[in-house]
Amino acid sequence: MDEDQKYMQAAIDEAKLGLSEGGIPIGAVLVRDGVIISRGHNRRVQDDDPLMHAEINCLRNAGRIGRYGDTVLYSTLMPCYLCAGAVVQFGIPKVVMGESANFAGAEDFLREKGVEVVNLSLPELKKMMAEYIESHADIWNEDIGTL
Image (cartoon, rainbow, N blue to C red; front, side, top):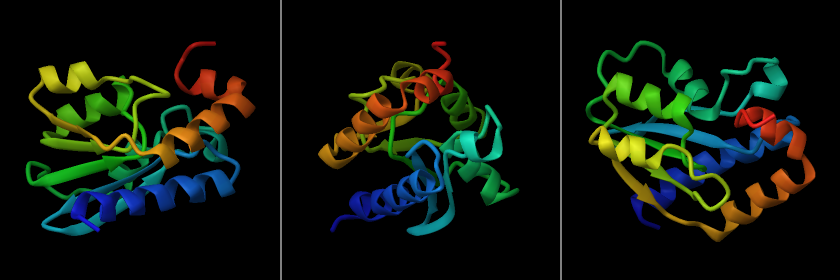
C-alpha cells in the first residue's frame, strides 16, 4: 500500500465513523512528515453545526500547530469552498481526495491558489457517497447549500 492509500484509508475510517454516528460519511486526516497529526469527520448532523465539515473538524482537532506548509490534507471527498478556503488560509500545499464524482467542490479554486490536488477516484468512496446522497438527499443538499 502506498502512502496516499494508507492515509486515505485513515480518512475512510473517519468517514465510516461519521456514518455510524448518523452523520454524513466524509472523513479527513492531516499528515506531516509521514505521521497523521489529526483526524476528523463531518459532524454537522451530530453537533447541529453547519460549519463542522470533515476538513474543518480535522483542522480543529489539530489545534494550533503553528505552520501548515509541510502538511498534506487527505479528504474522502473533494473539499467544498468552505474547506478549500481553510486550506488556502492556512497554506496547506497539497490535498489528496478520494473522489469528486459525487461533488465537484472547489478543485479549480484550489488549483488557482497553487494547491496541488490529487484525485484518487476510488470506487469505494464513489459508491459510499452515492448511496448516502440517494438515501439522505435532504441532509446532503443542506450540507452543500442547495436547499
